Image (cartoon, rainbow, N blue to C red; front, top):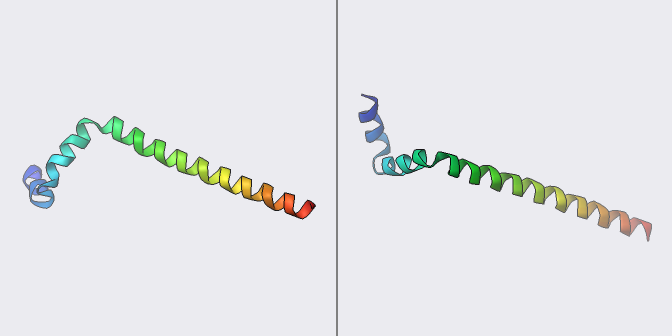
Length: 59
């Protein structure tokens, strides 16, 4: 019953889901790693901007 329901709702996307579930650890690691890189880049940019503002005030 559930399998037929998923087949109806997902259609051709069902095969993509199977690939995802087979390699779920790899995909999740890539997604979490990308999010961490984005957060760290955002922090370093905000810190460098605050350093530039501090240098401009001291001059």
